[in-house]
Structure formats: structure tokens, C-alpha cells
Length: 177
Image 1 (cartoon, one colour):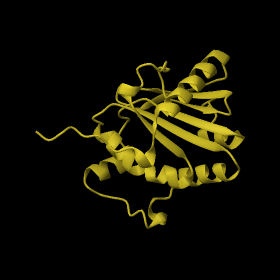
Image 2 (image 1 turned 30 degrees about the vertical axis):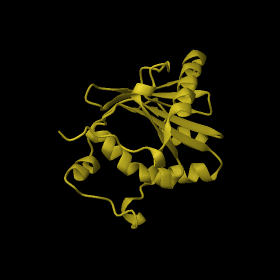
Image 3 (image 1 turned 45 degrees about the vertical axis):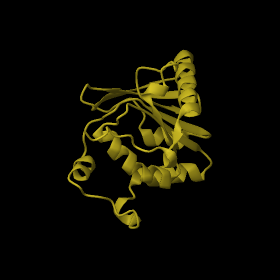
């Protein structure tokens, strides 16, 4: 049965000014790339053809037309193994033109946060992600509800203001005992 929710590509393609993405989970469903990383496989960042994906090109094309794309991640510390991997592969997001920041969860106590990850397009349309407890996407919800947009926009900006730019964020690990 076809979904009535527009695809991410459609929503991003309609975007004219900005797209922001707030991530709140410490892990998501595992992928083959994550499993490979856990086995010790690393990306040759010098060989762009080996890691550049259609998603990266879509982001690069969108940024080239003047849309600012920002991603903020609220993370627990010490970070999960998944977040360590996510930090590693964020090189691709940045290379594509995304601006990425990280906010340690302990610095988010005074930020009113929504209960779900989301994308906000041009400050008017939300794509809310609903996940299972294991981190798999259950469904995406599209809404232009002014109250939801206002909350999510304010939450993103508050996180962004407190967050650390990707190139400055150092993964915090539990001290060895």
C-alpha cells in the first residue's frame, strides 16, 4: 500500500530556505554500515567514490541552490557505540554541506524538547519520525500544525545555540578502570 507521506527527497526538493534535523536518540536500528564499522572496517575518506551516496548528492545539490541544512544531535555521555559510529560517518554529512552540532544531554536540561526526532522544512512543515524501542522507523508523520512547528523550531534553535560544532566535539568515553 503506497504511503501518503511525501518522501524526504520530495520535501527537501520543495525546500527554499532551510531544513533542520533534530536527533534525540542514543541509538537507532543497526545497518550494514554500522555492523562493518563494529568489525573494524573503516572508510577511505580520500576515495570519495567509495562512500559518496545519493543522499550525500541530494544534500549537496540542495545546499548549492541556497538552502541551509543544519543537523543537531542531543547525546548522552559517555556516548553509545552507535553515537561513536555516527560521529565517525558525519564526515560525509559535512562534506555534503550539512552543518552539524552535538549537544551533550546534560546541557539540555533547560531546553523544552519534543518527544520525537524531526525535520523542519522552511520553518513551516514538520516531518516527525516515530521509532520503535529498538530504533527502527515505525512511521513518519507530516504536520504543519503551528503549535508543533513553533515548539520544534524553538527546541532546535535552543539546542543549536548550546551545541558544539562537529569539528570541535570530541567523543567522551568512560575512563578505563
